[in-house]
Amino acid sequence: MKSDRLFYSTVAALILVITIVGFFTFYTTGHGAGGRVIAPGIMPTVIVHGMGITFWYILSLVQSLLIAGRNRKLHMALGWSAAGLLPLVAVSGILVAVRSARGSPNFNFFGMGYHDFLLVMFAEMVVFTGLVTAGILTRKRPEIHRAMMVSASLSLLLGATTRIPWLVSLFGGDESRTAFFGPVFVLGAILIAVHSFLTRKFDRWLATGDAVLVVAYLGA
Image 1 (tube, rainbow, N blue to C red):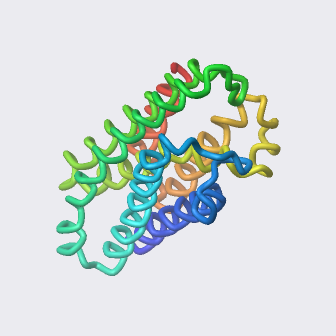
Image 2 (image 1 turned 45 degrees about the vertical axis):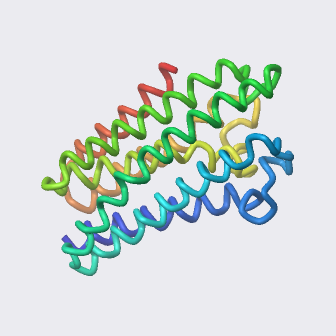
């Protein structure tokens, strides 16, 4: 149990660090990837979406630390904050996707036209919503609940990993769809392997959550 708690706390911290690194330019200057200026009309929605995701990752870390510290009562009380962040992240994400597509009809992103990429962004919000809902419904079954929440966090990580140049280069460059999906897919597989090693059994629930996002994104 000690190694299990340490695993989820470490994963939450790692995902938060990746997000901060990926969106560092946005946090510090308000600009998009590569210093791109975000259109003033869409900026408030982008801020709401970005802060919603950031708060989600901070909450995930706090929640995992509470379990590690055996403060289950506070963990359960704070857990309903996730239900409040869910519609904020999902709705703002869809609005950002639609409004970005309208303003960038000829934009090419990792080998995808922006209108093709639009479906991937929709899939991201649907997968996140589905995994968080599954996590909330299984809150009394910790082995499923934790796996669904970690998978939900992974489902939002594409935006950060695509903004880390050395990581994109490692997976084939910004013209490759492998570089878009690869880092998150590989991280998910590593987490399954590490947790299975620590617990001495295959983590089928974490694998299920990871499979859902892989199938949904590749399908989109």
